[in-house]
Image (cartoon, rainbow, N blue to C red; front, side, top):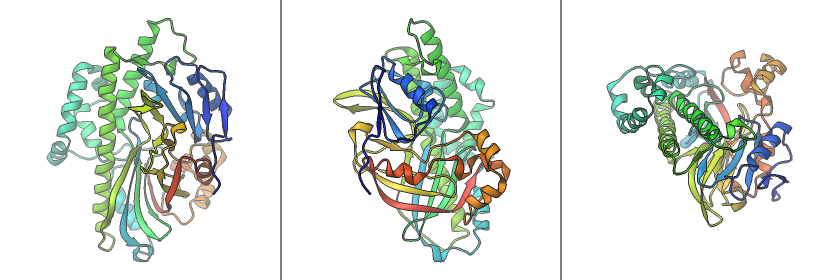
Length: 401
């Protein structure tokens, strides 16, 4: 596959925007241009091949900032990301019908608005996280009020999937070996933390004379108490999201052991965020890097890039490209809104586009139809400078919320 460099550069802001695709909608272009005007942005903004319009900041963007963080760019599904692991099972060892396997996963992992029941073991497993959340809530009691029954709810939601574009999949790679792959984040508590600090940033900016091109680009300045509190809270939510995916993976493996031949897990699980912020060094300077719908792709680093429901997904190895701030796309990226997908496609379309995949095929997941997403193979072709493909996965089971 030929190497594809940066496809276009958006000029006119304080910094340029380097875009790794020609497929850029007008609204996403406008959002990228808005971010490029901010005085806190360092060097340039990178837009990944799956880029599409979001709230304030564009999904599929990498935003490096000096001495400041934009909470709305991180978003409300803090720490959302992927987990994947390969098993010692081949396609020939799978049953002809995978319906019972899908049902077993759905029984083991709560999806949508469902959550686990109370248990002492679950409380004990959450003890380290509980101490961190207690410290955050003491400083910001409004976060607790935003999530009813928060002291128990976040524990019950540990090891649960959620809804929207979150999923659990069983996939086969090019050698017909089975993988477990899942996509989820920090659940309701992460949402509350995100909303709370987005409001805090807006309040802070109202006290300055800075003119924002979009109120969702309000930032918190390093050295301020709200900034320090946000760094603590966003770090906690990212840890919670990581632990949530780890817990779900264990529950899925337990369920599979009851329905599939004996197997081993071959290799360490890949667990990567794609909605998060962390401090990193780039071009000789220590900055805060917000990846909103992008994953870290440092040289040799393994990552997961899922396609839409029923399409291919990829395990990749980063090339450490400095122009992308060592980043790459996080998935196929939406081509249309959920409401437009529901208007444009029918249940028959969903059945046709997910043929061969054991999954829900009802109107409740019509907004997640593959046709609502960009072509994952085109996304991959546009980032050969950023990653190399290690494994190509094809879904055989998909569980949605």
